[in-house]
Length: 300
Image (cartoon, rainbow, N blue to C red; front, side, top):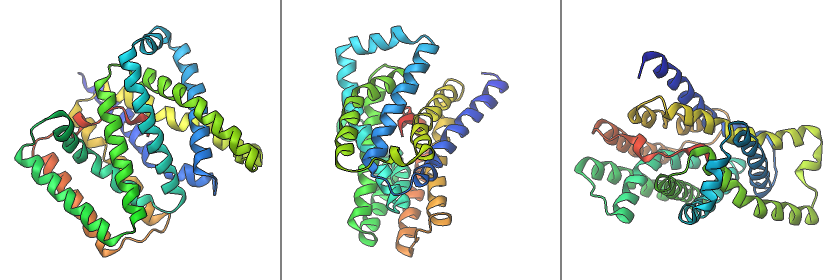
């Protein structure tokens, strides 16, 4: 791999994770809207945009192969369910002032992936990993002690749903773009049904004017752009480099929560983050490549 490819890959990778890190700003721009409506709009507009990209880059045969493979389709049905849960909880958290809890989840994700590998795949945990996971576990326990059950539920549900999503996407050999197309296609009928029901119960955010409609349509690009950047970066960079870049997003979310959204970082919460950061430091310095635990989190 040449230096030009490395620089280009680094630019793509940083761009992807910066966009994911700044997602709370976009969701806050939408204002006090039902989280389910935002996620449903995100599913539908992402499906339309990705379909256009699939046609433009001639990935139709790969997409048909993914739908025709029953085993792959079964995995993608499960991954679609997990990412829908992840999206819904994440948007709700941002809209209800819980961005710190959301950032904690994505700091936890690499260490939780190690634990899931041990529990579900029978992988052996080495001493360095055990220390890292123990530190993270202590941090979560402290977070539970010093935060509300809602905040704890947000952190754990986001971390677990995304780790399981990543595990499934590592298992099935479907490209990031095709995988997102299958997932959003599977979720689209549910999203459309929810929007039709919601519209029969109350005024929809989409009806608030052209400005709001444009913001909701933008959900497709907000979802797809980081995916394409991530996929381009992954083809050019080493796994170790991608693994280090993944901490950009939760770091930005952490800073936004405190500096922009005014969330309170209590001493207990700071100690909790400190334990988790210590666990990540042990994990990284100990020679583990975090990027191996990361799949295309483009659907974040």
